[in-house]
Length: 347
Image 1 (cartoon, rainbow, N blue to C red):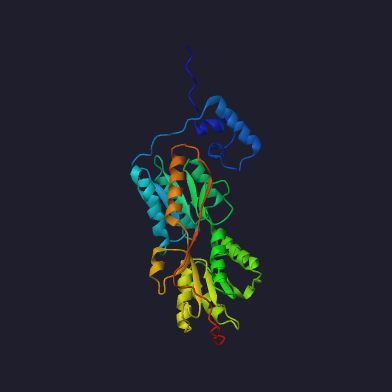
Image 2 (image 1 turned 90 degrees about the vertical axis):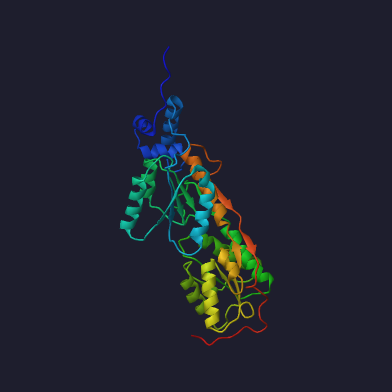
């Protein structure tokens, strides 16, 4: 009796199809950036010969690599906690890296990942944009990749987890409108960030639905950093017709607004209402406690880790894009606008 042929590896399928191993890996993992003809040819070979992929539970020495754009503040801690909740039962260690802006550091990070390549390793990139070359290298080595809070559209098709940024921006602005504010400013994040653009769109939509024109002077271009919030708030509060409320699109920038208000002699919320975004644990201890949009960071991280483990086990994902809901958390930094806005000398 003739024995059935063994299923083929990605390398063997690539050789038969006359394509790269990265292309076969994209087909196997359901990535979109493969031509229909190539995809059909690879899928036909898989049907004919089968596909051999390691499906065993990751070994205890495997590693989940967390790649951050920047390791600052409470944000990374909440992400690490969420990942740890999921991988703890597998006794998997979590590695943490920071993506530096210079190319040498990027190469160093990737070389380190490839050097540490063990059974079941995977990468969760947090608010980071990997280059196409980096993604290709990970794919060639069959290292699963999941994006958490992706910054742009360049990696469509890669599994990702995000939050309701547009609805959060809408809810923050509506809350201020319902309190009676009409001069509502926003401090955005960097223009390249999807989250920043979506929160700004939610702000614009809320004003449009209320019949209030968007004043370009009330849009401050920030960077998601405390210093950026401070600088933009200082400019906004010295306008001839200053805002009575500021929506800072992350909690760090909201703290910058607090500092600007204090330096200018303004009281929160008596003279100025402030809303943030993220609901980091320390924000309930701000003075006054910050009204903010809760972004479920630990749940987002746990969802990304679960997706990564499924990919490492060779299991299909129920969905390749997961978006979790945001929620308005009202505290003491917002109130009705003052009867007469506090005018400041221009400066």
